[in-house]
Each structure stands twice: as structure tokens, then as C-alpha cells.
Image 1 (tube, helix red, strand yellow):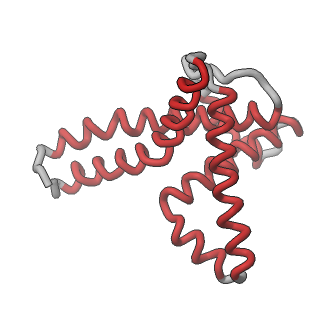
Image 2 (cartoon, rainbow, N blue to C red; image 1 turned 180 degrees about the horizontal axis):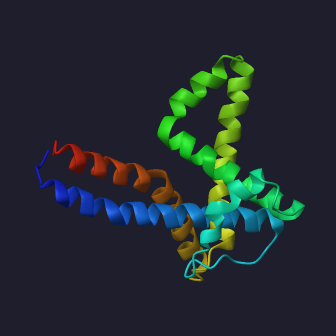
Length: 163
């Protein structure tokens, strides 16, 4: 492994974490738009209020339609993050209930993550045709799946000075 100054890793972590955060918010919004049948989500103007939806949902401050959309958007993204960070651990937890339950979990996880990419494709604002939308949906899913982990890893390398 190539050794760099710790500050290099700390600085390099920033764009990974920023792109992850924007992608995470965007995916929540595209899932909400999909469930509500709304219009395209504007990537160029991130909606930071998405980050306070869970506390508002818990406090009962969202109307029924918004609550349904917020729950769905966060549900899908939480499953996605869980699958990326600890799929084996999630499967171990579910397997306690039996093989059929585990099979349902596995199939559902694949379908829901696929739905997540479809939402990005259908409700993204790139407007570059089918292949551009597909590339954008894939890139968005890739960024949310891996850039957060990479950013945290770089911070760990820089913080612990083990690089």
C-alpha cells in the first residue's frame, strides 16, 4: 500500500463523502417521487430538508402522503446501506427465522435495490437520453453504495496515521 501523509487521506475523503451524501439524498427523493408519481427530482438544487424527514416522521409532523413517501424513501435507502455495509450480518439476523424467510429477504432485497435504480432512471434530471439516464442511475447507485465506505476508510487512514 502506498504511503501518503495523513492529511492527503483526510482531504481525499471529502469529495467521496459529499458525493455520497448528495447521492443518498437524491435517491431518497427519487424513491419518494416514484411512490407519489411526482415529477423529476432536481439534482442541481439538493433538497437538504430530506435529512430531517425521519425526526419529523417520528414526531408526527408530516401529512399522510408525505409520511408514506418519506417512509418508503428512507426504507429503501436504509436497506441499500445495510446491504452494502453488512449484507452477511443482515442475512445472519434474518436466517434465525428460517430458510423461507431468508429466501424472501434475499429476493425482496434484490427487487427493492433494483427498484431504487429504476427510480433514479425515471426521476433523475440529466435528460441525456436512455443510456445517459441508465449511466446516471448506475453511477448514483454506485456512489451511494461505495463512496461513503471509501470516504470513511480514508478518514480512518488519515486519523490513525497508518497509511
